[in-house]
Length: 246
Image: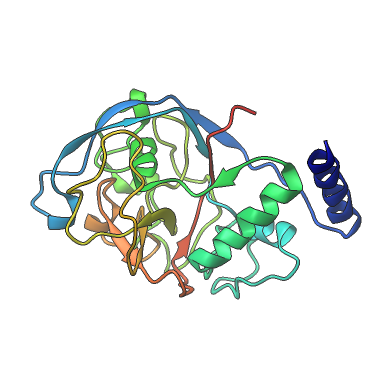
């Protein structure tokens, strides 16, 4: 009871102090089995393996500049592309994102987090509604992605391209998205089958989905990249995930 009251008073204090609660639109992803990885011979996408995931929610859109500014007391992103509140936030390190999520959870009482790499790939492929597309929602990158050649070397407002089978937008292109996992350059060896969360340690974190400057190869739903979690990149943002039922 004391813990519950303390949490309630803390939430009230945050509201009085001006902290803003936002509730990003989330898409329910029914869990199931899928084959993770590819057979294109890319070492870090091997071996092809079966993964079993529980149900989860994932952001319909990438987190935007406006959402970031609303949650954070100070705008710590130092955005490369300024003045577009509906564009995905970028120049946020992995640790900046964790700070954002902690504040969001405090403000909302919910349990947002970053998706695991397996959850990200499953959602990008369309979950149990997957039609086996090369990109998230299509075999034509132009219909689903802002990328090198059509982005004008900049980010664009979220949700302007075609969504994938689960009605999730921009999982291909616009900005890369941080995942919770450490990156393993040797691929998927020794990972557990059910709800994998990546290696226990590492130097870099996984980023997925390609960005405004990516070529076609980097846009594939199975393509894996890595980034220093301390660094802020003008082509890396994130989307939220959640496992609770609220």
